[in-house]
Length: 204
Image 1 (cartoon, one colour):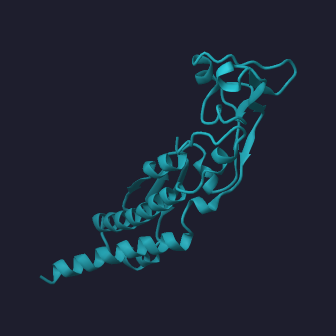
Image 2 (spheres, rainbow, N blue to C red):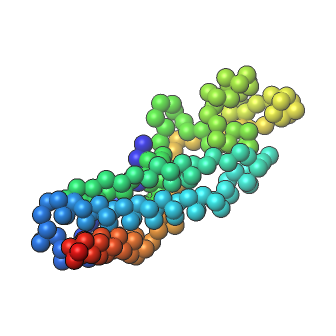
Image 3 (cartoon, rainbow, N blue to C red):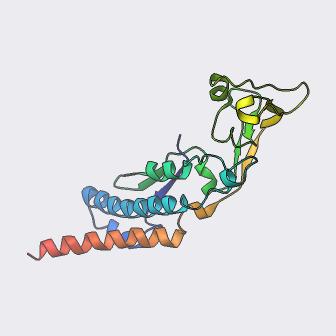
């Protein structure tokens, strides 16, 4: 699943604007490739750096801390780049990462409700995984949660594992990506480096 995709074009890297009209298809592709690569490297490093500190839910969940999901590490490692002679593209293949571009509403796909973990044991686990582990999970009649009394988890006490909701909205988190100006600078820097390299080779 693609979490976020954004273009690297001549608006994002103004240095390209003066060059594109003079270059052939191969030259334009090379410039877009350089700019895209610079942005991708920056985005990857930014996400992996954010992953070092963003564990608030896992650390504060009831009966926690819970095992961390490392979803941001996976997001950073998933960063991919592609480019043509007319544009570049940086993509993050991570469910939910689109919240970096704006609020994201999640709806259930196969079932009636989403399951939101509220217990450390349930965090980063699916209901099916828990059941396969031999844990009895039940939904009291008329209630909007799934619970257990499993001795291994709760010592026999009644504990809610998941809350059931029709939808969930993740707030906009623009800090998951570098600022626009930082991405512009990263693209321009790689283009400038490429041009200097071309001129250096031509002068030999």
